[in-house]
Image 1 (cartoon, helix red, strand yellow):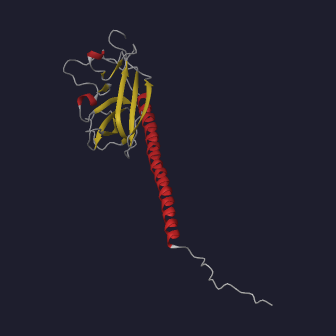
Image 2 (image 1 turned 90 degrees about the vertical axis):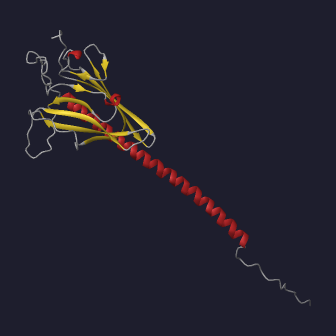
Image 3 (image 1 turned 120 degrees about the horizontal axis):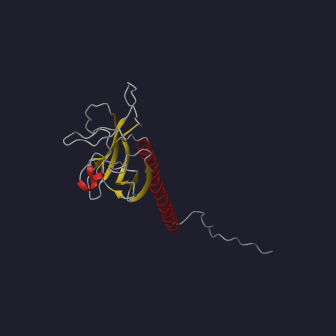
Length: 237
């Protein structure tokens, strides 16, 4: 009877060779880099979207506030209104607007009187307020950015304070364009209701165009606020 012969060749180890381990590490590193790159792009986009959402909310609140102030404008109409005499101080109840971008630097952009006084003091006084909007430069560079401040003081005859430390209404402003529309629908970038050049009239509406910047993306917000109370020009009363 033949005797069975068994092979004495050793069986192969279940482990991995060095080459297989290096290949696996390289594949794993490639996958990790792809995944992290995707997450980085998602996080970057999420941050940008968050900044744009903040700008949208800020622009909406800014335009609503300006609309409320202008919608409660106070204007002296005939027969109570009389043009200022020569050398007389301008009326505190005038509507005056300056195109500060054309003049350079920061400046009061718009001043008028309104019943929409916001009382930040403890005395609780109410009445007709002098509202002032002005831009303030932030930082330096070829493309400046501004913030919009809102001044609000009661028209009680006292001298107006310097426009400093007033509440910030809006930030991240690239440009703020204000246009003033007269009774004929013509638009002007400046206005002065105490000047004969404007017939001592007040505008009929104000067009607001606001550009806010988030990173390098600029978003435009605009509206037109019709004034419920106005004064016609000389010869039109």
